Image (cartoon, rainbow, N blue to C red; front, side, top):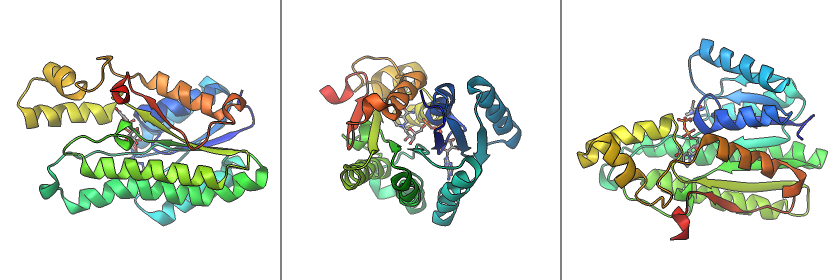
Length: 260
Ligand code: NAD
């Protein structure tokens, strides 16, 4: 379905990004991986994705906190794969704290990795997409781009901002064959959420099982975690021709969270 397309997925060494990279490779796209992690493990991941899809898979170690590295990531991907037809801005971090105690360097890192880096990547990738007359931009947002929770001021602000960026870019490109959409998952079981279970357990003084059901999934009516594969399948769908009229959308995949 995506044979001949080239995809850049930020934060694809773990969790949702890794799942999206695998699904895109299985759909036939060449993939540029990016993210932090142990080099030997990343090389194993790179090789396994290349095998799974029979496609070219590369890895770029850009640190998304540095705007110049984000621009270089896009340029190097265009050089290595020939183009960035599909850009998935997925990398993310979380930090939970009352706003008055929120460490300013954590605020800066969250805005930098999730909002600023998405802007820098879109800015660098759009000229090539316009020139080639086709493109897909997918921003991994969250239900926290649509609604808020306490103690997540930086995350909620960055994700709300990312939906604004999505809509603005979609309108600018609406007459082209480049779409820009936001995927808004509820809780997906990944390393990022695993870390939150532990920190929320400390905040609430509750055991893990109760934190999962009563805190994390309190607002998720399905009472089950969204699966990485479900988010990845939605991303692949948005890359297909059947999704060409979907642009500027913020699509929840949240077990009913935002239906309340
Ligand atoms: P994760 O921790 O499993 O993966 C995050 C990825 O981002 C990793 O590959 C990591 O190396 C990369 N990353 C972090 N800092 C980086 C930096 N400075 N430079 C380059 N890469 C960096 O997290 P996840 O749960 O898979 O989350 C992925 C995205 O989905 C995030 O944007 C997150 O906000 C969003 N999201 C997650 C959930 C969830 O429940 N897991 C729900 C909604 C939205």
